[in-house]
Length: 169
Image (cartoon, rainbow, N blue to C red; front, side):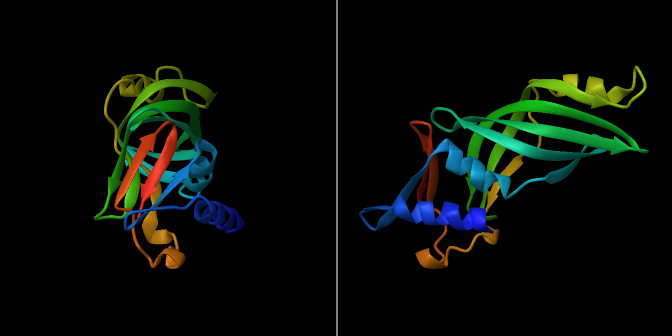
């Protein structure tokens, strides 16, 4: 909660007023602090339950970004753990009030722990994921952020400009 308070105070300090809109800019470091609040995440995909944790986001140009995550899958007491890098496009969904990476693609991965028998399909599953669109990755859920100081206004626009996240309320 302290981390969120610091990020929120920083956001308020960065406010710049434009015609009837409040726009603020977040650095990559600040965005990473906000994104960490949404992790760990679990998703079922291709018959396995995967946990994504330890996000490190890098803002690119336009709406492009990359995120490195620790991927863990456990089945019958055996675990596969890898560090993967995904690329994707920033997407704000006003209906669900969520900031997401739409159709992330696995670019690269490194196995960190493998308790599987040789030939088990989990490792080949990661290889199959490379270059394929995967389910979205949640970055920020505005349903769980108190925006009371801003009149509980939700973002109208979220973009990436000059490697900063621009949020317009």
